[in-house]
Length: 157
Image (cartoon, rainbow, N blue to C red; front, top):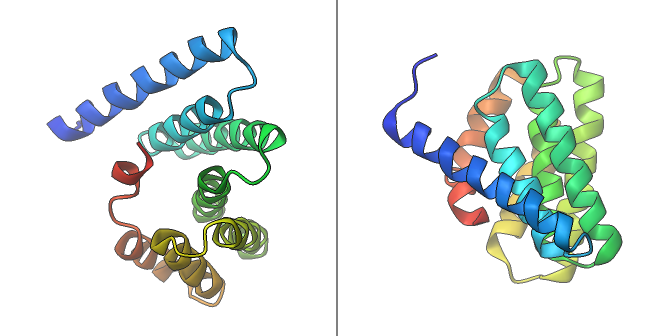
């Protein structure tokens, strides 16, 4: 697989962010912000993996987000990231019923993020799209997600 220059730069950036967060975790495992950055970097890096490796990396990211929420359950950016992770996992799940479970979890996390920060337009848009995604034909899902969330990575960090 050949990567464009900006894709390679993104991989380097998020790999550095992942390693930095991992090192910071060793010094302070109760830093919810760091856990969120770590999970976010895993979610971004998952885009450049095979489906199987991507799903594992997304699951690892979910674990980091969940750990952060144990420390700070109302951390709205972490709730949004966890919703995003569930959405990404759903798109990689070929079984529609199983995918719908992840889409519903995503919508629940987006709702919690909106509850904590009701004026955040990104959270509101995420919730709106997540509520519609389960009713869309599977082949249209990726198109709608890409059109609705263009630039997610730039907003995470």
